[in-house]
Length: 221
Image (cartoon, rainbow, N blue to C red; front, side, top):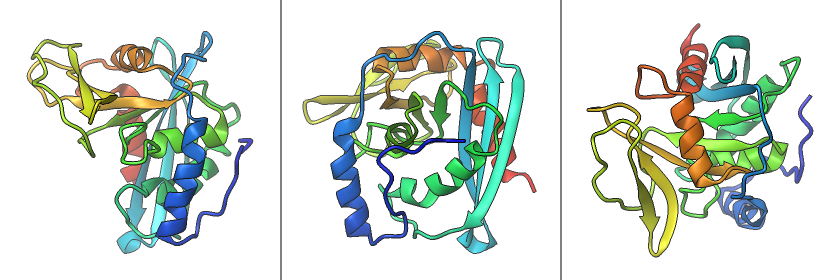
């Protein structure tokens, strides 16, 4: 069972949701507080019935072998509208419900979305990490904010994602010749370590195996 820290209501107006993000973002830790771990999970969320139902999936893999060890799917009524920058309010309740189905919680979570690379520095990965205390990393398929230089084509190369004078993430080439992914701190993991761990979860594809496994669960019927 997931113990939630700093719990708050989810079905709130967007202005209140932004205020909650502002209040909690100071709790994000960008320092490595991840001890030696044996399990890593991917989380992904899909929507059914025209967005009225939320379907959250958690896929747990053994680390570093990336062998699948557990999975869970939870569905619930969608209680928050689609608002860019506030997706955690729409998705986390179902993610927590899925985590609660697991016999053993993962020791690290890779989220299919932003972490610190967010207008208020509190994307889904930060929000989930602060609430659960589980180390998290944001691995997004596209950029939400920030600018960056061209990423070298070689696998494993990355450049900083910058907003103003602040580095908010890394633009990482996980495979030669494919589009990069956008990695950012979630909670209790530094950016350098986040990049390193994402690469250790990549095999032959652009996305880490955690994301691929969770996506299959979230989209399957």
